[in-house]
Length: 494
Image (cartoon, rainbow, N blue to C red):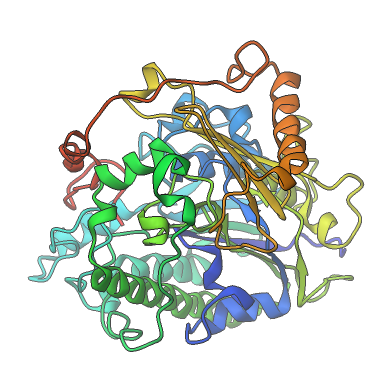
């Protein structure tokens, strides 16, 4: 590795599934610039959000810790667990970097910087659009931030939030940064998170394409279906969306990804204008996925592949030795790995208490003890929080996955190698008893080792199901649809 510190560009998307890049994506999906990063970089095909929600993933990025360490298992205030010190930008500033964050951060309160020297948020975009006095304003369609019904954007492509985020990053690269210092820029796109409000041509781009139908597991009905999973589907009415609407939603979702890919081309162009593209360290990832109708559900939270499995690419500078370009790594990784990787790239020493691992060393085969297992969980939301310690506890090695739901209880075991769509729950089949025992035993042992609050008398927790009707669940739909106007004071506008 050369002595010069490379510029670092971290590109993240919000709610992008793993099966939208590389060999996993549908053949018709156009992502030439993400493909370029994959051709020149390393694709990590078993990257997971250990707690598939926006804030836990971002706390993992910022602190280099996993959910069982940082403790944020919901979309809570980041300032409860993070300050200005001990974060990714402060470690990089100590290495001589200037730092900027542009796009959706989902920090709370939204203007807390957590160590970044410069930060521009969607709030700045919405204020600028209002002050422009234009007759056409964004997000005037009435679709909520968690709804799966697609709609056309109320502004043209050049005035969308996606375009604004990209152009602010272009301006930073070309004009606003100090050219005598290396930079760390986090470009954080708010899409393809709903509302699925693509502008033309992206709204119509894939309407006539062979859109994959949602996967529906044999476990989705009856006692094998986790109560909490069914609860989310009914509270948000995901289970009642017509097939035609899901098909249209998926088409627009793909269109939003292509829009992001196109504006990533603007970032590459800006780096090229400065002669920096070849020697910039670029990382591309998403915070979590999107069920998108799979198993008749939407959004995220759960540790199923559409929700927790995310795209992840690491592209090293062209001048580095052993760049491993065009290769694939199938070891399980997560967002906590970003901090130690980037601090090492910057020439610093990662903190000793990080849960993460250096992904450059992993890709180059130099990591002494690669992660074998990755754990996952999600915390309950009110009012379940008073009686359920967690929605689920999970563990995967990238080939097998085990999930324990306390409510009921319910347990799932999937052979991801043979059943990547998780159609068949093997937890009750005797021929897989040894594999279930292995994964469950590993999960319990890890919780015991850190004296986890989630075990009860050394065992996985069990709770009686909450008594509620489908009508009761649907009665709370307003709380879960994510209704927001452009005036909202939280960083949750997409």
